[in-house]
Image (cartoon, rainbow, N blue to C red; front, side, top):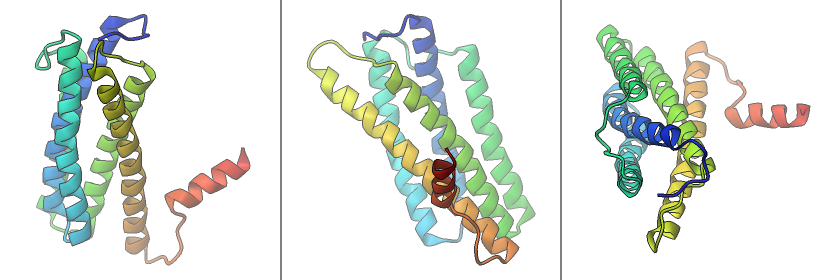
Length: 189
């Protein structure tokens, strides 16, 4: 793999952390599905779980193309693993409490944190302008762009669910949504 980055070690670290956040993401989705009684949310998280598996394949392909062992450990990967496990543990703690609204809100918070991390990783990888020599280049670049866009949509959707959850808990009928916040921010700039 060729990259326009001047720091191949940093690119390797990014790929290894992406492998780990993907593994953690699959565990987070699996646990989050146990936390919700909303069929539409459960179905969406199931779809995202499948998508996370496809994203792992992309990262694994990029690792192999760059000569990186996708199972290699690094300090950053170890921290990423710990963070993912912490989010899964938080949801399990909420499940033990048993309050449905709390459990669902905590699941949304944990998914949002995981999705935000994954979105940042994909954006960083896209910015690195990684290319694989030969005929796979176009396909892999398209897959990276697709994954980056999907992560951005998932962050926005999960943030909306979290806002909606708080609105319901607080008994409010009007709470700004993510798109309202974005519009207000865009207008203020």
